[in-house]
Length: 394
Ligand code: SF4
Image (cartoon, rainbow, N blue to C red; front, top):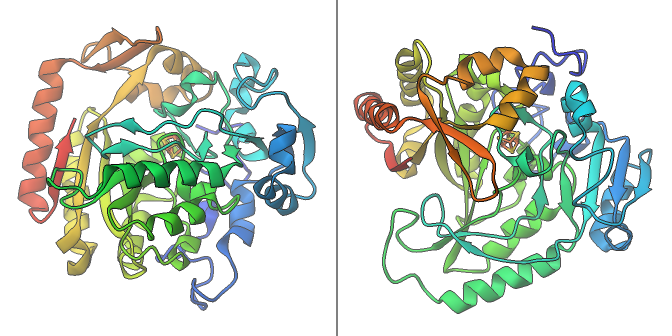
């Protein structure tokens, strides 16, 4: 299938980023001392920003000015609110330009409501995100649901307030006295619930500021999932206080579903570098998509992990297993731009619908199907990657 909105050299495999096995744009230079990846042509191809919608206060803030300076040719459009932008959010006409809008448009706003929500599965807490939206275009992504069809990255420019709020929350918790599956010692805060922090780091220093903040808090740890290898993160010196979770799925599924992301093999190859740079490196085995041949495909992926990962990565690794959830509205949107993805994502014979609190019709595997698939995947991990502790499977 050809994707009409993709960059001419974007085959959806992520190959357009020109990453070598380390994920570095220039294997001859150390990512710690060389030029920033975010200034490379590969990064500019992912984010050829031509239009920035900004709340006036966000544009005038130090972070806003930093972003405007990074994209000097972009047209600045003043908006009252980052949240509802007529002609950008909820515009069905954008379905044919879904991916182009994600790369060519940015939104700058201020996060007004700062809340830290309890989680207990992936992390102890969900931090107020420093962004919402993503320049990548995974067909199953839940992030755009609340914004309609296009959800380019909204950067929240009041990062100082976000970090101060987090700092107060961390202080209030005190030390963690009982280990749990999130972490034996630290309170874990997910800092990337509604986007991808590795891509945000191509835009501005919000991710860097969060990583630096967490290294001052000995009782807490940041955590985020990513599908993008951004070698600039290797220079942030997180000192063990940030957990990066590379999301993995079989390469065939990823080529079909993870549009614009780094190839799965690059994410795996980057694990050792990120560990050496001071990150804790975990994996998200997600989403698990049940389709003909899925067991064999996951077996191959787990064997690849066992073959390729260095022992030092294996010794500290853990994984989350997350079964696919989908959504009727997203299914209908996807039929407009990527119908082949829906051949595996939309499986009414295996799935059941459940209306969520906000009225959306979410779809997940029927209980028996899901429990069986989780059992199979746990068995495959035990057989082919026995060093990989499954923190939780859901
Ligand atoms: S990388 Fe994450 S946030 Fe971005 S499109 Fe994919 S699932 Fe959504």
